[in-house]
Image (cartoon, rainbow, N blue to C red; front, top):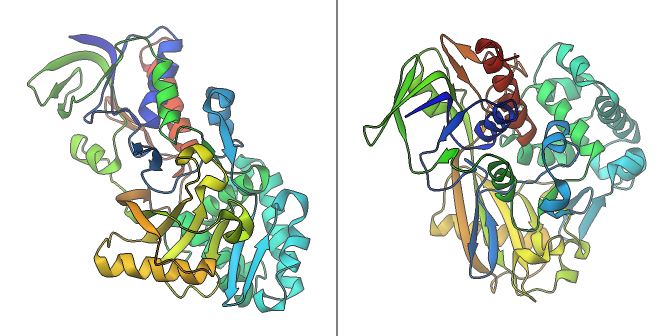
Length: 416
């Protein structure tokens, strides 16, 4: 068998690369080791429930994804803009839509979450990130997120009770040692758009990219064990001849296939799904508001009532709650700790909540510590490498990486 370009991996980066190449008339073959496309963006449909592998959301403000994807076909349902903050046993506050008035929203949280001046400084920082071109954000000296916030004048109360709990769920690390360049991109997208979910689950995003490819482009259940300059070898002893190879696997697999690729450390997370026997109106103001704990006195880093945003994620009348914890502990004790923390976060009894799904994700996100290059090298000898570990750890980063790698492939093939 032969193809102009062989893409290894049918995640977002691999599918985006294949799509760009096919648009330009290149003969592409995508080899995927698993039985479905999507990579880490996967969804299970079990007994009428839709459960994504890990708590993932799609922000319609992502410019690359918006350019390529059909938002109408995805049937996007926005989560409630803003976040909910559990400040104490009898106090649940909400920070509303940051696009309307971030300063007033922060002010409504009261003095227990920082001084008015500190909140004004954080609002100014976030709004400046939203208004700045990405190229300008990339050129700023890189330091840790926590150092950048402290330098901007954010006091410890606001940092520890609002900003840290929120960003822990984004970075999957509580110390905010992630690059401020990535934090700036996160704040930019948070102010510019509202995180949303497709009605059929997050996997419908890679499936849409797959459907845009010519029939037969993707071969499932076809793992690659060896890569040469002009061919790849699969586990079934098959050999595909090619002019160029693009590695679009997870970082650890890419590291084993290509000398010189160094996989960044990975962040792990476990996502828990519960069917709640509580009326939606009694949970987080009756909205699909991302809820965090200002006191961080339990394992849950964030939680949301999914069906308050997307009713199709469960059967009629059911209330599906998604919650995330750092690490991979799914023991009985961990499960009870999650249930107890959810009771404190929502302020309701959770003994009757039914656990319906648990997803430990070992490498959910590449660590993005300073000095962090938003665009890392993609060319390793005669092979190209794509993935969110080559750009930013996000759907946007994965898709940009795929297109960027495909454009370089067109140059190498002299098909510009």
